[in-house]
Image (cartoon, rainbow, N blue to C red; front, side, top):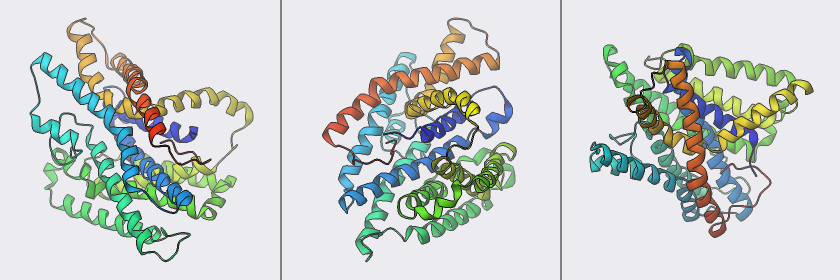
Length: 369
């Protein structure tokens, strides 16, 4: 069972990423990088939710089973992309070094040069998928509370948040002001500077599953309105403050994941706030966005190839002279279309096999996994 609202958030994240790598509207391009941060918060919430649900149903967390299910979700699509990349590079006689492929295969692109630029975020998430179960298993092992053994998350998150922020401050302070734009990736990509975004999603997931009373008041009309305004202000900083600034590379990341976390909670808790005629008008749009969100992983994987090879083919061989807006329209539509095609051809068939061999935890709570 999927949560359509979470899929809508995923679609917002992937659309932000797509416009970030386009050539059109400057404001959207400048803040589109924040789509990855939205993915981080969603991943923290959803992946921790799977582990919390497993504990609720079975009283334990099966580390091996979790990794098998995650691997069958993520690896086949990525490795097909890498095989396709190798084939194209062989045809073009521009093959990347073998070490770059190893970096992609072992999910360390956020520390070393790889084949693709955008796969750094997949590496951050994969490393998080290793660390989170270990942390939760340690809490389960040493907690005396068998009903809620993960309550230490309420205290662990501030530690992680402050530690990541301090590390970002120290790293940014070590970079000369004139070199900040050229060295953004030194702060933007490494896991030790970005894992607080994912862990904030874990905190939201913990509260959602174990302390729902904390969220009860959010659904009230005025509370929801005030929180919506706050979330909008926090998220907007990505669009009017440059990424290559000391503020954004330190405090800005923190403000952004808090804003996205509030948006996530509002999506989970707030219902029926729009007038019925407006809700009926928006429903087809939300359904379309939810469909895009369902396929966001494969769209994310392949959008770089579409941007470079497909648009390059149109320009070089079909001699299409495209303005920035026409180019972006073709790029976005082609990225979404091809991503959906590859998702249906690779990702979802593998998931159906996975769910037959390693069934998920039966639950009425949407997991979007």
